[in-house]
Image 1 (cartoon, rainbow, N blue to C red):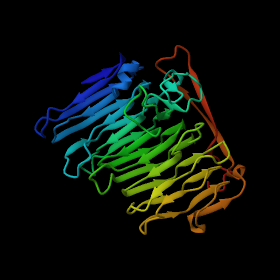
Image 2 (image 1 turned 90 degrees about the vertical axis):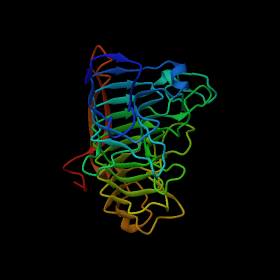
Image 3 (image 1 turned 30 degrees about the vertical axis):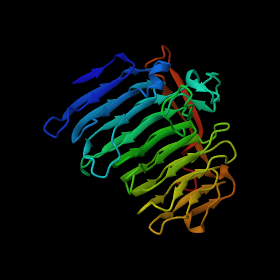
Length: 348
């Protein structure tokens, strides 16, 4: 089934239950999804929701391409109850080329008052991507690539959705075999979180975070728990070749992690004008952090990578991209300053 070129408040795909009744081969493309009503957001409505409350369940070959998703409680969510025995299976799911965002229409002051301020501390919404569960087959991974996500804030639960610290992306609750690559995230209270829920030992397994741009995530006035990356109870996660930029004097922690991660690898990332890493209980013994580039960003350990005191030594270039390609009658563009490696960059 191919759904494209339409306007919708939300799309729900629900499996009937059982591997003998899979959902397979659905394309959702070039659609305008949202904005949802305030009542819909308050009830945790999602832009695109893949789920089955009973399980076991198999969804495969679901492609979400080039959609614009605005002001939904969650932009896209895959559902899992977070139980170690759960067997919901999302194979070969592709989320690519979408713009997912919230704006001043859902920003608040934390008391439910929609003040519509451009720099609102809170929002009624939660996340661009709420990935619970993933592929049970390492050869048919979930692919999240070339998306643009922006504007996320800590949830105001006075009339808002169920709750978020303002992560643009959260991958948790039994999420497995996921590649998160070549995305742009900006202007959000947190960039990306790997997390855990309830009975699980590890909230994620085999998640690769590669070649993404994170720009001014964590700078929201008064926002709490702000960090570019928050990593809790992750197994075999890899962060490689991401670019993290803060233009507001290192207010954002580039990384917050606990000591329950196993086989976490953080390498070849470029950090510009960021706040320091913080940890809960220190780094785990199987965590590897090396070969990163710190420009105006403090290293916790000398072996973490190469240090330059001046953030301008990174010698980066700007990037410009299209936004609101479906909702806008005329082309709109967004420029992020100093986020692309140049041939003159020391790390080139």
